[in-house]
Amino acid sequence: MDQKTINVAMIGQGFMGKSHSNAWSQVNKFFNPPITPVMHTVYGMEAEHPEVFAKKWGWANASTNWEETVKSPEIGLVDIVTPNFMHAPPAKAAILAGKKCVTCEKPIAGSLDDARAMAEASEKYNVPSFVWFVYRRCPAVAYAHQMVKAGMLGDILHIRATYLQDWADENVPMTWRFKKETAGSGAHGDLNAHITDMTRFVAGVEIEEICGCISKTFVPKRKKLTGLINQTNIIGGAQAGGDEYDDVTVDDAVLYLAKFNNGAVGSFEAARQATGNKNANYFEINGTKGALKFAFERMNELQFYDATRPSGIQGWTTILCTHGADHPYVANWWPDGHLIGYEHTFVNMAYDVLKVLNGEEPTIPLATFRDAYQTQRILEAALICAEEKRFVKLDEVK
Ligand SMILES: NC(=O)c1ccc[n+]([C@@H]2O[C@H](COP(=O)([O-])OP(=O)(O)OC[C@H]3O[C@@H](n4cnc5c(N)ncnc54)[C@H](O)[C@@H]3O)[C@@H](O)[C@H]2O)c1
Image (cartoon, rainbow, N blue to C red; front, side):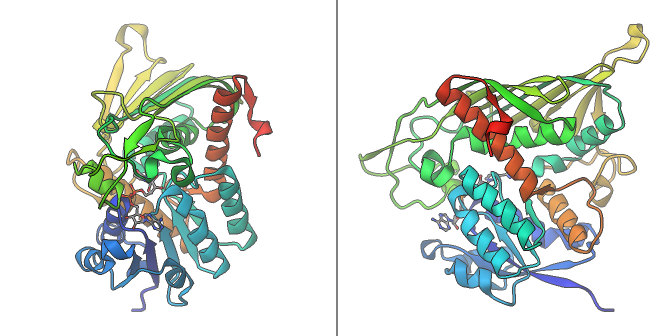
């Protein structure tokens, strides 16, 4: 029997290079996607020895020339996992080369101009293009989206989200993540991007105005890096050598307040030096009929408060979102109660991309380039608010 396939090229091979390689190699085992991804080529920088990565992670070919790789007529899907400033060039090149699909890590780009150009190009050339906002694809988050859509929270009044980490103390050397020209912003584009997307997705309401924002850099200079290439190595504990310092040009923390188009109010906080928090990605949504809480470090669980129950028995319920008959994606993983982790969210996303390429509905909506551009507008509005110390309407930010 003929099996439809698509050749994938992945651009970049750091932290996300591993998680995406795992996703492309697992998706056909746990799911039955209508199109099978073939791990054709991985691009890495010369110093990274992409041939070693290719062998270890199952790519047939290795390349040190991303332009050639993206243009190759053999490639159908281009998957971009490079630093933020390096999202737009391969994405635009892939779209212009007429690829069947482009997928790109978040935030969609390092600048709003790049984000807009990517969204416009994908629409102009009709190339399905998606951003890996994978936290949508935790079964608990996907289920929360479905619960809100089914009206179980009533009218949404409050959205409260925090994404706190603590890896970036002054001992961490300079990398692309601390420079505006390579990252665009710091914790903001890295972490607020996720919680902004995730809460837009779950609550189904849109931010109209940013009503306050603080952007703070705690560590203004960092030791220059010697001999290290990617963020993964730094998180792995490696240190910079030498005594030269370089200026940090992005935030370490950004907090913003927002008004939504349905009258709800919200607060968002992203931080990389929030001691004690490792990957504390959290939201709480309160509606007139109920409320939800999600905390990624307990990602299999969703907290639900049903305010329609008799008052004497109201209280928070912990839902273990591992029931295949009810909770998205989990039927393809393990029996009830056998927990899943971070990497599964990427496999879930790969599955939905392959479904959409076959003209099918995804399990839950994917973030298109247009959708991710909308998130980028919100992030930009927050930075304008912090810079100019005034309320910023989203309409101002194009
Ligand atoms: N979805 C998530 O949960 C999540 C988590 C971490 C990172 N990200 C995003 O993934 C992207 C990559 O992050 P990462 O943590 O994998 O970074 P990383 O530093 O670990 O790896 C980046 C890789 O990109 C390539 N690269 C680096 N500099 C380059 C350059 N100048 N030109 C071309 N290629 C270059 C290299 O192959 C490098 O290994 C970023 O956009 C980041 O925001 C997403």
